[in-house]
Each structure stands twice: as structure tokens, then as C-alpha cells.
Length: 129
Image (cartoon, rainbow, N blue to C red):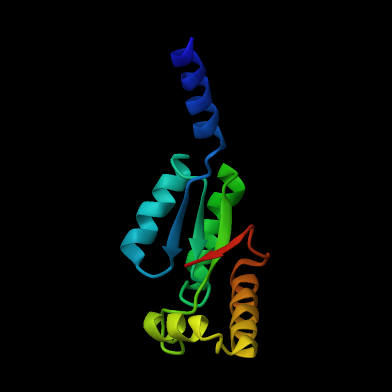
């Protein structure tokens, strides 16, 4: 009986897991792979670097979203690109509680605006690392 209960438990966990690929927009080759996975319903969504993705690619992935019922989220970014701080500095500032909250809020707003401008809608979710 335990084996049957474990099997149902495992199936219910598997059915409730949402598979999201992140860092979309950082590399064209990886983006193509992710689009293919979305079209085949192998993943449930992607998390996009809104400041890196080109508008034409945003249009392509928005089309996949409408045809395949997948999610497009924004990958909130503080550590990649020219205007970002390195991870070590970010962690040190976080530990010392010296993060510039206004700078973080402005960055979040800028990235949300870039996402909406490129996609024409707000993200289905926001994540980051």
C-alpha cells in the first residue's frame, strides 16, 4: 500500500511543478532552445532579461505564449550588464544592510517598463537570483 501512496504522491508533485527556464535574452542560441521547448510544451515558461531581449524576439516569444498557453516572466536583474554591481559586492551590502533601496526600486521599475514596452503586457511573474 505504501508504494501506491508514494506513487500517487510523486505524480501529484510532478503535476504541480512549474518548469521555468531563466536567463532568456542573454544568448540567441539558448533562446532558440527555450522557444523550441516552449512550443513542445516541455517547459511551462521562460523568465526574460527585459533589458537584453530585442523587441523582435519579444514579439516571437509573445506569439508562442498566445499559442501554447505558457508564461513569460521577468528575470529581475541586479548582477548582469554594465549598470549592475558584482555579486560579491551585492552580497556584502545585503549582509551589512547597506543596499541602496531607491536604486533597487528604480532598477525594478526600469526593467518592468522595458518588459512592458517590448511585450505590450506586464510579466506573468517576476523571479531573479
